Image (cartoon, rainbow, N blue to C red; front, top):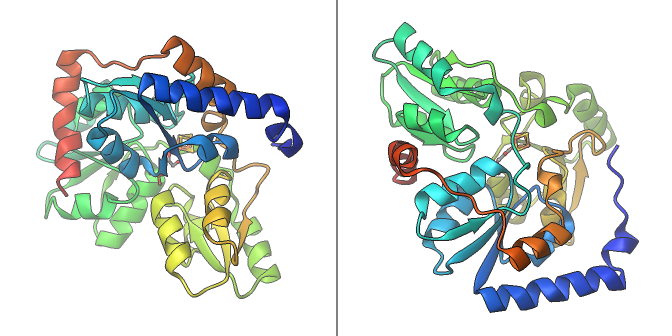
Amino acid sequence: MFIRVDSWVNSPSMKSIKKQILELKETRGAVIIAHNYQLDEVQAIADFTGDSLELSRKAATLLNEVVVFCGVHFMAETAAILSPEKTILIPDPDAGCPMADMVTAEKVRQLKAEYPGAKVVCYVNSPVEVKAESDICCTSSNAVAVCKSLGDSKIIFVPDRNLGSFVAEQLGKEFVLYNGFCPTHERIRDTDVLELKEEHPGALVLAHPECSKPVRDLADELLSTGQMCRFAQQSDHQEFIIATELGINYRLRNENPGKTFYPVNPDRAVCPNMKKITLEKVLWSLQDMKYRVTVPGEIAGRAVGSIERMLKI
Ligand code: 13P
Ligand code: SF4
């Protein structure tokens, strides 16, 4: 169960932490970027919030030399690969992604040997060594376009079985799917979506493609977190059932004060790794310039190709 204590977030001690962060950010010439699943107070202090693709693009184009990356490790690592000249800091080096940990370079090499001639598409939620073994990378917002760009080639998709099968369905072709998954998204149940649909028959269901097939089948739209934010703003609908990590509701509610958002399984759809980044850790990160994310040149050199090919799409 995830219980928020909002009185503490607005307490004098937290106000002092926020003030120190803003001052230090100026001194260091730093920028704070945060993923849409970060704690509300971390998103509130960030200069930019976005999905994985938006944050990688942002980190690569920013002029600031110091970037405090509030997200999970593979995201900060992608930023470090794209901008080796910048100092990329992650406030908690243990903020990992269990899905990314489910795949290894060795597993990808085995699949390539089993399916010669197939192209390997890796979800950005993967270790750098896997990106180095892959033909092209993708995120949830561009996975369909990336796979489409490979024409008739057979596709090995790693590591997310849910995003992979969603893309395969969209393109009407069979993929070789790896069996990885996001534990947070697989905790979202179709029965809870159905219950909310009954309670709010006028609401549109927006789900992340990392959700399981029964949940995806109930969705009106399958979208990355950034696409969800844009869709909610542009839609004429007033009510939305949100099937993804809880953190995104902060941004959805802030950007759409007149609309109503119903999170599915708010006590279970919480990514414990995203929640490891706290305001205190952001402050310590700026104070001590820690924890710097670097990727050794040789492996970064092999991984950058798959990321840059994706960014061109
Ligand atoms: P987005 O790219 O849609 O923000 O998703 C990232 C992620 O980790 C989803 O679990
Ligand atoms: Fe990884 Fe899932 Fe957390 Fe995203 S929500 S960072 S895929 S564990």
